[in-house]
Image (cartoon, rainbow, N blue to C red):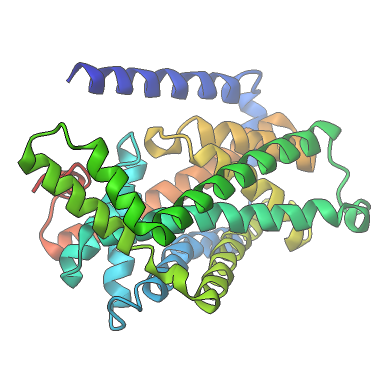
Length: 341
């Protein structure tokens, strides 16, 4: 209990620090003036595009699960993703990442451990896909410099976080490949590490670990590996399109390709485990708007508040609709991610 309170305290402090950097030096009268300068038709389109990533993520997840169960329901995958993101947006600690596989496992009568393994794969490929898109953006810099005159520090931030993301995803890929291709040795190591635990707990952990490793089985096919990477690019290009339409709604007219660095920075901010992505997403969004596109800080804050609010409200509305349809409560679903029934 004490550890849980400490974790929440750390999350609150991190959120507060990022929000302080986000809100400092803001002229609220200017911010409000900028907020009113919006194309309402395009903003309605932005709202309609919020669920796009839930659909593309579900298509990718269904493809990943084909070796285990080819007939997984796309709608069940969409429900699981929507509820997972709803929990993540409301509660701290990224519990929603576990809600998604556990919920789908219950709906499709599949192994929860297996599906949790696929979520790790998904996150790794998210990083790889966005780092690849960012790499292309940075390599092609000489061809678009007349469209975008970004501050020098913007490229410095992008290079730094790009290297961090690529390094982390590469490390994760190496670990996952090691777990799968050296399965027998990995199982022996797991059994050795948990040997001191009581037998009942040890058997559960060992069984879950085996299911997790089995969840990585799609690595046996190079074609499936490449196809999954292509689907991951589809997911993130769809997210880039969502933000690009939002840019147009506020008359920020940049070529579609130039939305990539902003999306990459918001991905970094969103990965910080604060409730509702508060603080991290906001700070990195503001940083992107100012350093990449040269926006006024007040406009950057205003646009960030709008796009953040739209994503939270639409996603949570969809999530509550699914909860109502299935006769569930938000706290019941949250408990799925905490290992409680």
